[in-house]
Every structure is written in C-alpha cells, then in structure tokens.
Length: 117
Length: 112
Image 1 (cartoon, helix red, strand yellow):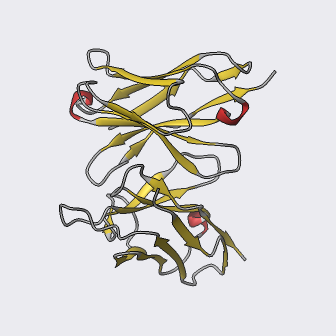
Image 2: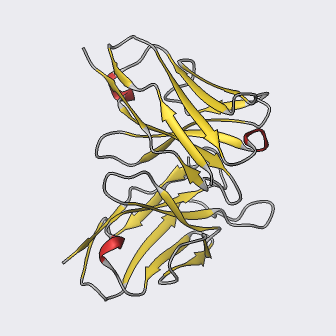
C-alpha cells in the first residue's frame, strides 16, 4: 500500500527554521513528482511547492518563495521541506502529496508547524 | 491565479437524502492535452484529504458509487446520491490545469 508519513513539525519562534520530512513507501518514489500542501488552522488547502522526479526542477507559491526549499532523496524515498525565516502566517498542517494520475492521488497524515513566540 | 468558488459553503443534509456541491472556476479548466483536471477531495474531521474524483468524473478506487462528479469548462458538480453518516466532512474542489494549482474554499457537509 502507498504510504506517506510526514515528520519534523513543532513549535518554532518567528524567524526560525524547520525541516519537514515525508517518508514514502509502497511505490516507486523516484517515478513521481511530489508536492507540499498546507492548511492553516480552520482554513482551506493551499499548494506550497512541488519537485520533479529527479529533483532537477521545483516551483514554489509566491508566499514561500525565497524562504522554503523543497528537496528529495530518491535513495531514501524521502521528500523534504526546508523552511527558513518562518512567520506566524506559516502556521499550518503541512501535507506531502503524490502527484499520481490525475494529480494528488495520495496524501500523508500531515505534520503541524506552529510559529509563535 | 485561477479562483475556485464553491457553493454552498455549508450543507446540512438529512440522512439518506441527496446532496450537491457546485464548483466554478474563473477560467476554463480544459488543458492543452484535452483533459480537464478538476478533482474533488473529502476531508473528514481530524483526517487528511482523500481524493474522491479525478478529471471531473472518474471515481477513485474504493470510493462508494453514491459519489459522482460532472461538469465541463468552468462549472462542475459533486453529487452524493444518498448521504450517510460517514460522509460528514469538508469537500474541496481543486484545479490542476493552470499553475499554481488551486483549491476551492471547501463545503462543510453535516447531518441535520
């Protein structure tokens, strides 16, 4: 079965950094684009970033461009999101999602990032 | 960015009765490859999103056949033929045709 398991969330002060991980199993990770999508408390879903299969190309939402970096290690079947200069408005549950046929066919359970002093 | 507008935002439904959610996009979602990348997701309370429908009308594996999607261009609909208790949650439409991909605001389905 396809599984995506996020980790690395927690409480961080404004201006701080955090690295999220998403461990993938049950499929050939290197064959799929991968995404991060976030959901602020009580709010809707917002795309954050994607990375292509070999990591050669990525793209970001304007709200995180220059602060967040998406990366992947296909040997470890793991997706990452490096988050710097965190702001209160980055507080959210962060989901990794597989870009399978028709887009976003599988999601992880999410990891909560809270930015607060 | 393409704006996805759902209605209603809240939908109280009687068990066993039908429900319908509308989703409208600010631009046509027909892609250059001829496909229309409009998906529907269900998010039950405390859970992560789950895809129900992809490319307008294709049901994902394991999704009950009481769920159906339809529409074209800019107007799309998710229908639940007979609402069950397990259908309570928030439903989102999402377009994957134009970057950045965008979601609707969500429609909260609850039992009357």
